[in-house]
Length: 265
Image: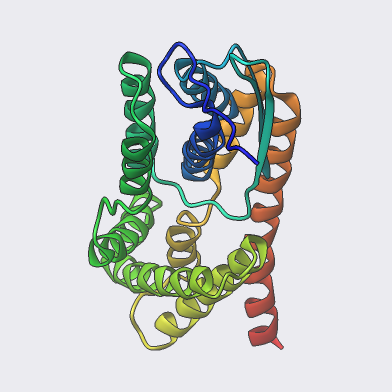
């Protein structure tokens, strides 16, 4: 049987490569959504990139846990791909890099090999080393404690609690612990640190220490993005995001309540 001739659209892209190109576009959309971009941005980015590669019609559909894109090629073929989203990790630098790649693709259609290379470069990019993120957790917790009226001793205890929270979340993500469960564990660890440190004389106010540590877990960005999605007309995604943010808030309360209740008993 003779091999089918390769078809080339007006962008110079071999149509048989469109599956792989669409997979790269899905990778970009996935990284945007995971890193904290709103649904409207994800859909627009995918639509612009697919159009740049010669697709006549592009129909992306994005919700908090799934990305689907359907394209109509120059030869009237219809291709659909989807991607399941299972975890999130806020990274605004990665959002910026994905947007930059999208703008570059719109200006100059990159060959498939170069597109894949750029996508993998963004995927494996590390903005900050682990020790810097660890110290940031500590200093943020300490700063919030001072802001809410805590003493220097309280802020020192919050600093150590912030380090513990980072370690718990790092281990939890490596073990692929579900987000709500990980939030409960992180909250419980923060409460245990507050009680332990005050018992050892490092800090005097459990409340102030706890507030500083809780602020590290508050899903403020997720809630804000969800409200933006609702305002933009992506009601389903927005409502799902609001529900998840509320569940995480309840998980924070549950983690603290479990520790304080057990210690009270």
